[in-house]
Amino acid sequence: MNTYQHSVLLDAAKCTGCTTCLKHCPTEAIRIKDGHAVINDKRCIDCGECIRNCPHQAKKAVYSKLQAMDRFKYKIALPAPTLYGQFDNLDDIDFVLDGLIQLGFDDVFEVSKAAELVSAYTRLYLKTEGNIKPIISSACPVIVRLISLRFPSLASNILHMLPPMEIAAKLAKKKAMEEHPELKPEEIGTCFISPCPAKVSYVNNGFADYKSNVDEVVSVSDIYFLLLNKMSPDNDVEPRCDTGIIGLSWASSGGEATAIFNEKYLAADGIDNVIRVLDQVENGNITNLEFIELNACPGGCVGGVMTVQNPFIAKARLRSLRRGLPVSRNAPGKDESDYIPDLYLFDNLPTYAPITRLSDNIGESMRMMADIQKLRELLPGIDCGACGAPSCKAFAEDVIKGKAHVNGCPIQEL
View 1: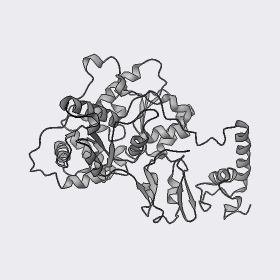
View 2: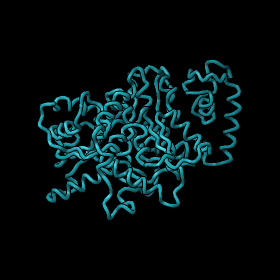
View 3: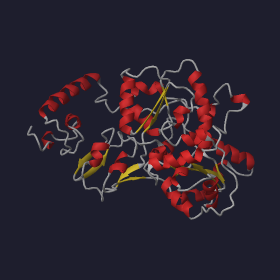
């Protein structure tokens, strides 16, 4: 039984069955049945492409509202650096951090601060013998799930480092316990302000045998509109920002990769580009690389579907905010500069059945593959989507699996 909790859902009442989402889903997780889209939970990677492209807003991201944090006595905001790029004429990040305190948070721990620590330890990870290269970043949950489902042979290349969001939650709770020993651990809540739904899925499902330290995930768009009523250039704000150029750069594609201080890297963004890169890595067509940064959203996290601003504008604003900042304000302590502490690492990757697997029996799989090929040769090959599947190949596969009728193609009589 599939118990994976997804953060991308369909509002069937708004869906017209127009097939737009069908053509943009990177894992062919969507079919049109009975006049509206149906999402296959086992194939969905929560990338948000259907949300981005649906002309009827029939797909939606599921996340918490800020009121969900009311159950905690001590509340900590974990703003993604993408949040800072949403505001026009912002020249000081402290105005955003101060606004979060005004919204009711007791403390703020910048995810960009944790990102600088993750970058430092990634540089050390790259020097560790025995790692299979190119090492693929684990920061984007969509990429990790995509590799597990569609490119399982590359699972051993994934960086076994927790994402900055998770490190920020751990360090924030540790800081709160040290500063407020009267608090119980269950009274401290962390709230990640996310640009994308994939982070919601990460928190809800955990990571293999690892349970997230993030308690709630709210959207950048919700917090943006709440902050507009709190932020003012006339406010006398307390200096809180503790991040540098590296931390802010993580919001855009290439920010993580350039922070490894190694020219043997590749950074790609946008799910179609990501899949092309993974195809080439799997086929051995990309060589001499040590690190690969992949972001499902166009432009990186600034392109997430839970943001407000155009990603190119947000990127430009973040570039302006970086002026005058040091390269990094966060580095491992002297006692932790030669090894990676356990709190930054995870042991096991999530395991899913690859979507290319037709059957658990190899003989049955071979027979099904042959039947799919025979049926494909009879189909028109125009991938029109009129059958409710994204391509003639997908339709043939559905028929052989017993999920569609052979007469479902309206173009070609079979």
